[in-house]
Length: 80
Image (cartoon, rainbow, N blue to C red; front, top):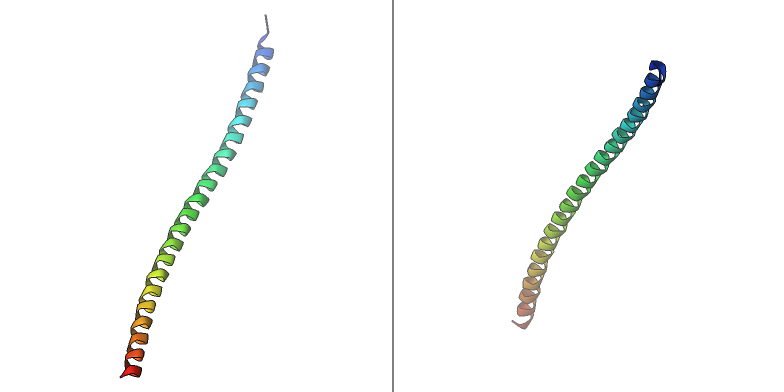
């Protein structure tokens, strides 16, 4: 039968291993949280970029329509 000192040494080693594993998992968890935050920021940035592109496309369409009207007016003035 094992004496108390051996039993406690055994338990201590197991606890050390568990604590080490816990520290590793905490570090991994921190990294995953950081990665998730970066991913959320990327999604927000992408959404903002899409919004900017959509606004620019609408502005471009307005400018194109104005130019077409201006060209039509100039052509009418030349004929008239």
